[in-house]
Amino acid sequence: MKLLAKTEPVREFGLDLPFHLKSHFESVLLPEDAGVLLKELLVLAQSQPHILHGEKTIPVSGQFYWIGRVIPTILAKLFKKISLSQDDVHAAAAALQLLGHIRECHHDFLQPICIRIDWRT
Image (cartoon, rainbow, N blue to C red; front, side, top):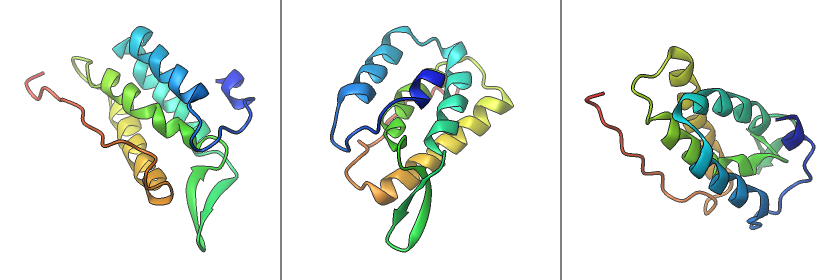
């Protein structure tokens, strides 16, 4: 996380860092590690300075809003766990709320999120 915190701002339509992180997490992130990673990324994604959208301040980092492109991949991994801890549930809820805020100011930023949940587990 310390390395990500030092990155330069990512262009809105740039694919570099978010694309590579998403691909990396899809291939190597274990469901057991997804909750901790999600919590750490949420801290970055909500760090100051926040985005000003019209006259409203959105609680999304102006520098790290692009983390929203990676969050659905991490959520999908997290939801593959057999059971979620309270921390996992809270992190997932906070991530979904953050995605809503990101969509509010970047309408075409996020693809529709479709995560299959097996309610039997």
